[in-house]
Length: 173
Image: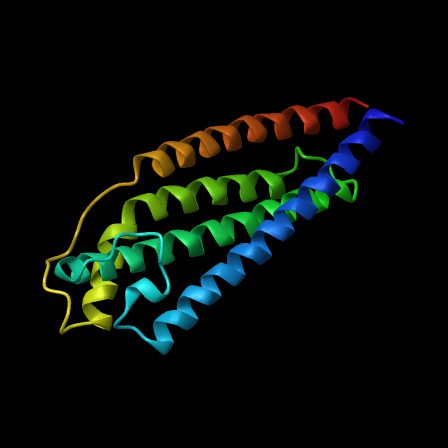
């Protein structure tokens, strides 16, 4: 089996795994949204693992919105990554402008999610539960996601350079 065939086989497995992760993430996000719609006043109904105390309900509702924003961003990033590996599994080169743009989009999405999740989440909580949320706009940065987004963006520039090399190689042949 050639190197290209092995790469395609690996890419198909990765695409399958990303598809499963996307479906599971979508189901989890749907479960949380369903729970919020059914009973928005009891956050422990949809986040049982956290310590929900009645004294901190307004902070917990803001955190709920932040988690949902992050989950949506991760869901979109998974879907974009799936399309990358699906195309590679079908025989497309990883060094194309489409792949580079998709990798860059994942990095940008993660950077945006890391910086706006808390302000947007706190504003959403104030809009959804005006009687229960009393804090001002919360500003915080998820440093792990921010750094990961920058790393992905750096990888996009490496792939951009790979596209240039691929083009030069194709023109030489």
